[in-house]
Length: 294
Image 1 (tube, one colour):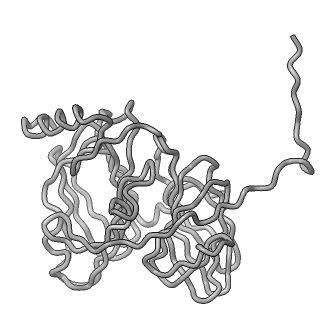
Image 2 (cartoon, rainbow, N blue to C red; image 1 turned 90 degrees about the vertical axis):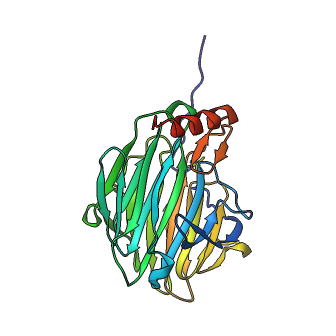
Image 3 (cartoon, helix red, strand yellow; image 1 turned 180 degrees about the horizontal axis):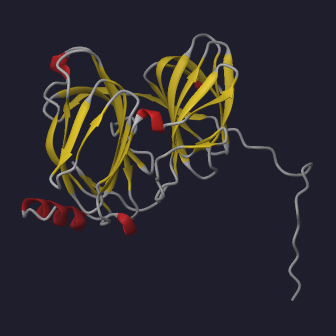
C-alpha cells in the first residue's frame, strides 16, 4: 500500500485565521460570599458558560463595606478557581491547613478536585480591592483529583512586549515567546493581562480549537475588524474560531484580560460550588460535604 503525503511550502501554507467577535455581553451586579459586591460576567443569563469557563467575576470597590465580609469557609468540587488580584490583599486558607496571601499582581490557581473547604478574606480595612475570579471546569477524568494550589507571586509572572506600546503579563499559556508560570494541563489554558497605549495594536496567537474571550477592564478597545468589535470598559467579547486575534486601542488606552481554553464537550451539572457531569454526582458531592469527607 502506498500512502500519499504532501508538504506545504511556505508559499502555499494557509495564512493564520483571524478571530472575530461573535457576540458581546456585559456583566450584572450581584453579591456573593458574605455579601461581597461584584459584577458577574460569565455565569449570568447573558452568558451562562463558555466551555470550559464556568464563571467570571470582577470585584472592584474602594468602599470597605462592599468587600470586608469576604468569603468565609465554603466548599468546592469538580473544577478550578483562578483569582487574579489587581489591587488589595486577600488571605486564603483551607481545611487542610494551607494558608497564603494574595497581593496586587498575584495569582492563585486552585484545583478543587475531589473537594476542599476554603475561605478568602480581605486583609485590609480600607482602600481599593480589585481583581477577578474565574472558574474553570475539569474534565470527567480529573474531577476527583487531589486538591492543589498554585500561588504565583507578582514577580514570577513575566511581562513581554508584543508590539510598540503593547505589553502582556503572561499568567498561563504563551505570548511573544514567553510562557506563563501556571500549569493548566487539563485545558491548556491561555490567560494574558494585556495593556495597550492609545493608537497601538497587536496580533495575539490563540490555539486553534480553543474557546476564547476578551474582557476590557480599563479604557476601550477594538477587537478584530468586524462591527461587533468596539468594546468599552465592562464589555466581554466571545470570539469565534481561528488561531489569532487582533487587539487595538485606536481611541484610548486599554487594559484587558485575554483568556482561552480547550473545551471538553462533556455534560455539565452545576449546583452552587459543585460542578460535575451528572445530577447523581452532585447529590454525592452534597452528601460527602455534609458528612465531612472533603
